[in-house]
Image (tube, rainbow, N blue to C red; front, side, top):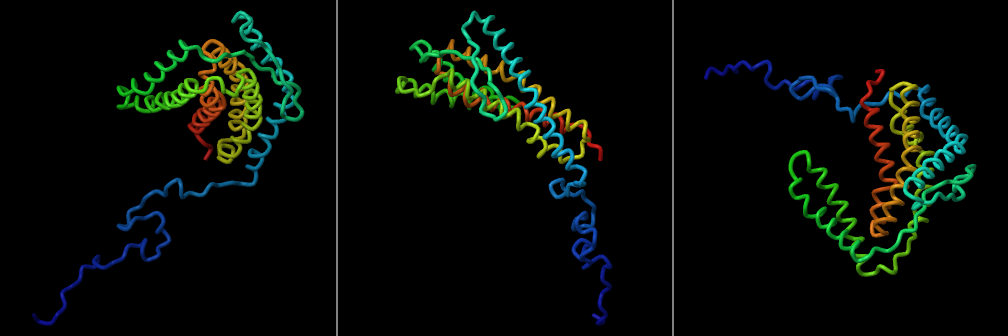
Length: 275
């Protein structure tokens, strides 16, 4: 040892630029390599002019829906009346005063569904067991979400089977009145649809026309879907009894409509933004 210190590697002991407080520390790793900022950390550019998209589009579409409700109600009467005739008068067309102010009446499909017979209960139990235990062969690959969905249906129906086995006479709901209430709620879903999209889609930079088109398409789709949806529900309860009422109420009503809105939103998010 001659007392002379060994030369140090110029790279040894050097701290990365990100650690030394370099301005690029948010886009560089500890080795100095560059990485992209995660989209969850990015700030959304929101110019003041975008408030026009957020407020003007839903306000205009809500006003158009309220002003055009007499034509929408007439369309629903025609659709329900057509299927009432096609089904041999099993489903009747009725109307209740609207709960929303400024609306007249809300037409809906009415059916007098009865309690399940022993045969109907037994058939429902067989279907429930198939949904719960017959989906074990779908628990691999892409079919796994389908298996979970079918099992959810099976669990809901299993609770209905138990209830109508133990306390059938104490069922408190009338199927016809329930369809009327669900139709009233669905009118509100149509009215708030453009405001939902204003909060989750119109804040993005997709352009005024696309934002207007998405909300208008969603509202038009619901206007056509709702009378068909509840006419099918009324017919199902009439033929298969109120044993399937929980299924209609939980998964066959508002749940379907919001699923439609989510699907249209996912499709619209695939459109290329302006920036």
